[in-house]
Length: 203
Image 1 (tube, rainbow, N blue to C red):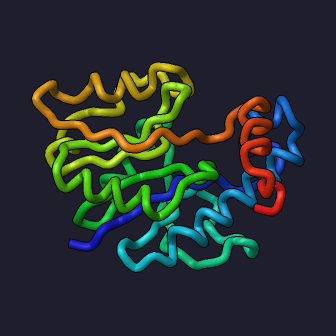
Image 2 (image 1 turned 90 degrees about the vertical axis):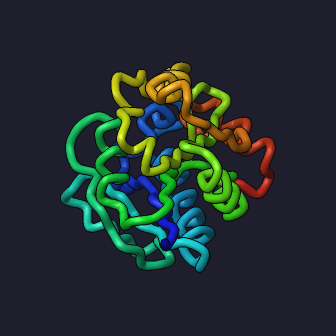
């Protein structure tokens, strides 16, 4: 079966994206970071023929298209509810076959990480890409794991998001963990990323 990569995307509007980051660096700079990071991520991942990318967008009024995004992709709507409900809905709507989901604001995400995720999902019931802050940048679920409720009562945007999700899976299920990557949620993350990547302003 074909592999599907779901990329969660917000409409890139000033004041509507990266709000925690915007409190530290300003709405315009946060918007610019999100726009550039999302563009680069789509370009990097959507042209890979080993999977098919779908943009899973919010709000539902957003058509998923922006002139600065480089490639057209099929678009799905996130719908209503908290992050867990929207992620679950995306998995339910995905085409049959192995499926992984990522955010659109992880600057270091590369095709090799997606390749590892699909390989791990072939052996495990669930695969996660952990972040240093206790969250995760990728999740993939087997058909068996999809019959559970992995996203129920998760403390999103907290140090417990990954632990809560894993705890929702039966203890008999096998779980794979990928490399630790980080999104950029606050000003300190942004400063660290720019220091670590001198070319960050060009992305």
